[in-house]
Length: 287
Image 1 (spheres, rainbow, N blue to C red):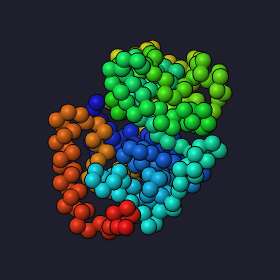
Image 2: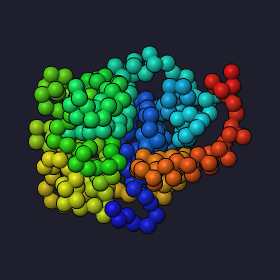
Image 3: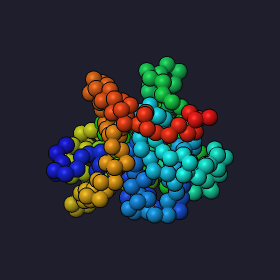
């Protein structure tokens, strides 16, 4: 996908994700993209957010994705500690938001992180539904992102329903938990098409509707008139993202195979040289 000089697709996606967040809610993520989006949102778009990198690191800390020092390098002594009970309490009171990266999402916004193929004889076993059933039945906003918008990930019907979208499930569950937005490497999508189906909200710079439809497993709902272009990240957005992730751990989510392996080794070596000798041994390493 061609992009204008000065920013990359990871920065377009993270900024688009950040601009969806608002309000006095607790924002959590277990991925580099989700954590960086929450951090950018608090810095630029939604100062009332409370950002949680991981339960261990606490609330309102600055994330720095790493490989070998834990999922995120943070100053744990400055974080506000939270328990899992606190997090579930926030979910059940609709004070929680999270960016979920599903393996599959379908035209109704049902999501799958459980298995690919038949449940009894799966081709691939995944991590399991985890907290998605609670999120898709209690939250007034649910957010999803994909970094490889393809016929394998954006499908007519998910192989296993880990999280409920619109359609028959929503009629039973009610409006809380309905899918709100999907950000991919091609554009931003809502779920306000006919009968709650996925609809195009904007396309990233250089992306055409034909390209998106070719890589989607069902006909998309399209707004009348010209489709908006996703607003690109500002220089300040880019600065914040790059400063929060100097090792570029986020880029691993965009890669696979030998390219990802080579990037992993390069990040690991930079991380080892930069942090291992200097980072304070606190938390579980310092006891």
